[in-house]
Length: 204
Image (cartoon, rainbow, N blue to C red; front, side, top):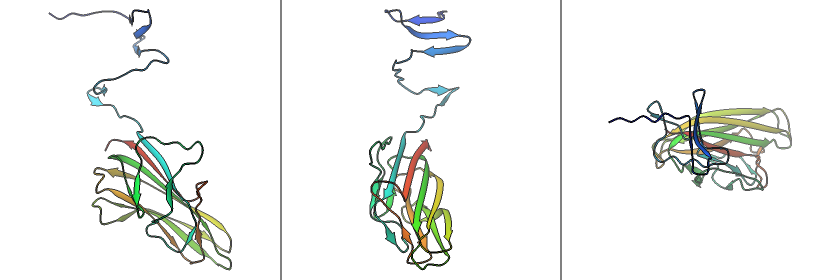
């Protein structure tokens, strides 16, 4: 036999509202409560996205000159006072970054540059390179900046969204290309001048 319980409010033994329905809005718990969902929360039969489960920043810690393909050393996760992150760490070896989880990832790469004394018109590129076979890398975004004299600061900003379906084969690198050997790519261990952002947006 099917039973139907018709109520607007369910309370615990202390009289606190657990579930309340009002004007077609169902409220579960109250401010300060922890709601533990065992199983899969669904929207009309489809699983709800879990939100952002990973976010972190990395940076270059020291300056270098000339091209770098990829930037392979002096990289660290941002760790200054107040720095925050979500989820497991990205890992990197010789500039190849490995993702901790599959998913749709937003990747950003900012490069900061200083032209050398006596340099004329110059350009710089930041480039995001990805692979889906752990071997062949292709350009996902290439952004240029230019200067027209010596001792000028420049910056480039590149972004991409990468579908990581296998963490053993889907990886990312970061490339810098400069027109003149006198151009410096700027790094610092206390503040981010040249750096990378990784944010997992959702499931693949």
